Length: 310
Image 1 (cartoon, rainbow, N blue to C red):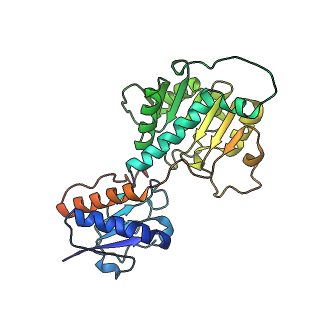
Image 2 (tube, one colour):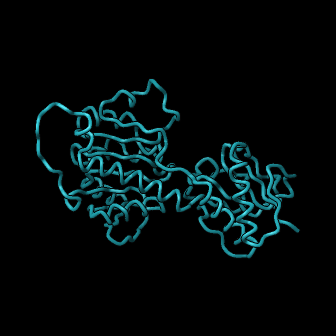
């Protein structure tokens, strides 16, 4: 009997993913049917994105797993109709893209590139920036993306502090955890990179109290999730000079409304959620591997802890 795989995502993605998934499944030696429509009780796996419209999983009585195309699963993790394993997207294309984006903006801040680009006043000021060894970068969130980013920054000789809710160990990175660890990390963070998941426990991680812990004039880079930041608190910190500049790629409301104060603030750089994205070629490989594992009776990879929400 073939394995029935439902593709539930934006229709525009079907012609992109169908040949990639089909080839990967054939390479795995699987007998399969891949389609955008099935009778629910005939589906073995769902390749899923929240914008595909599928919300009620209760009719899918044969379902073995839901395999998300997105790294963030906050919109589905608490779905009470979903009782089978849920895997989030972790692929090396996503990690590489995020690492490149974060490293670029970290170097931009570290080297003072904004001043050289925007200030052309004829004044010759030969002041070289410090070396990376003299700059502390704090990465909040040490999951797959956070770890990859922290390792890349450490390889450039930045003094990297990583913070997570639970203990982690990463070569070349000082890893802290817990509330006291967060305070210690932020107190040294000349550049703070936010790569935490969006959960009730991480909402407003950057608020009036935590922003006040940063060294005065610190920079913030947020390619993680919009709700990690209390927007009003950040704007106050920017206006007071407590935070020198913020580069923000994600927001509570997207697209960011034209009237939002971030757009006009002189110390904010807005990018339109482009830090990284799921790459179809590498994402299809991850999906096919999990289906192969499921059919072989092996453990799925990248499973979501439904209690933690990631």
